[in-house]
Image 1 (cartoon, rainbow, N blue to C red):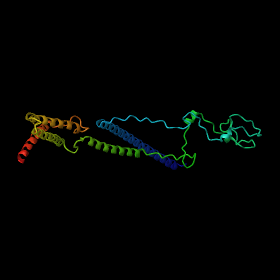
Image 2: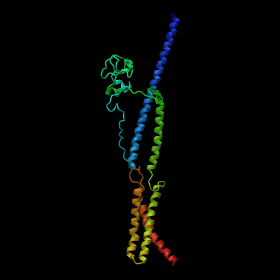
Image 3: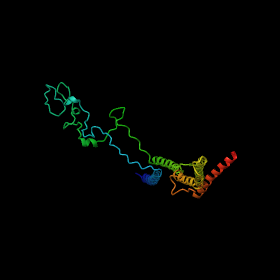
Image 4: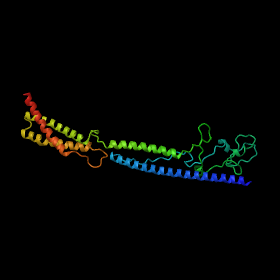
Length: 302
């Protein structure tokens, strides 16, 4: 080998060495990026799990118990029986044919129905010592034996092994699923921050509507009391007490309880505002105004 050839070979080896180092560095950086992405995704999944637990506790749903998976039925081998290799038919364990000249050994299978006393060889005698036949496996070793994937088309033909998945593609799919879970979680939080009663209304408008509705219901009761007073069932003092204090107080506490029961969002910390002064003013004005409206209507009809 000349010096020029040796120098060219050295340059080629040096270039291959540098290419190998660059490839190793790129592979190491890729692995670091994958590990960082896995850690970040794990943190996101943990945060999502905690947030889902909070949402479940807020809406009153307890955590489901862990599902107990029953062991799959593994067939006769799992029940303590010995795995039998497919060998001769059931008649193979019978003694040799009469007149064959070979002694009949108990427990040793022989060729079935040969007629001339000759055996079929090592394949016909599974478990026989000194020949290359398949031995019988005990129950413990049969469980540890590697399973053979059998295709549905042909018996005993190993199935094709699935191709290895790309970690980067799997991480990207997991990230997209985590983004979708975040989106659905935000929608659930928005729905949980709305009360069951008039969810699209503002808290002030909801309180005004509830107190006004309770005051209107009390106004209907006022009209019934007025009619009862007209026929002599209720005296004037009782009617005035209910109109001035009783029914307005009932309407106010009814609106207060309704806002506390159906006007409170599930995910709002603390107690939402119930606007007590506003409710007191509405209830103690609507009921007397209903009575005054009744009087005006009666006078107008007369």
